[in-house]
Image (tube, rainbow, N blue to C red; front, side, top):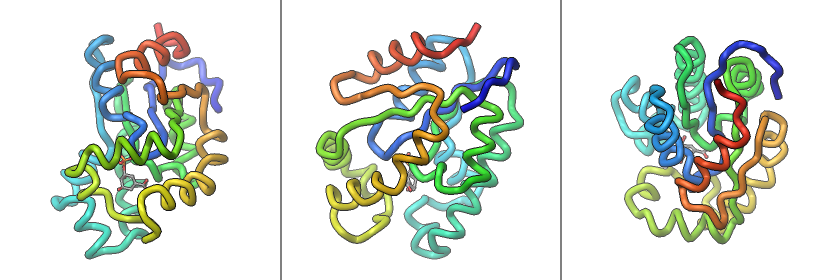
Length: 179
Ligand code: S3P
């Protein structure tokens, strides 16, 4: 959590399939602010898709790229940032997002996440498996590890189970003390 008085970016965190990128674009458009998707920035920096980075360089290298991209984003003027689902794994990243942003954690039940991920085959193809135990098993296992980390950084928590992306954006605007 942060209590910085400076104008802050909005940083969206949460598991894959919670809608960070879609919601982030809606908010940026509504507020007339720039939007950055950390995964897209990362792919542009490295020059290959995330799936290829995992396959060719491994997850640790991917996390190094992710940290570097986040560092770059933290230096930009106020904006809306959608992060990758694993950004909270590193303490450096957790400290960084709290220092430059108001952090909104988007949540959803594992079954809802699995349904959304399966409904987006192209997204699934570029989301490398993190555990090898199947979609629902992976969600349960990864969420068990990450839930305390998401909770630790969150300034606001928004349940997306019953919300459309536009409704999630509304809920965030109710909670984000931007001017
Ligand atoms: C990851 C989530 C992905 C992407 C990468 C790793 C994760 O981002 O950063 O595949 O560890 O949960 P999205 O949450 O945008 O899918």
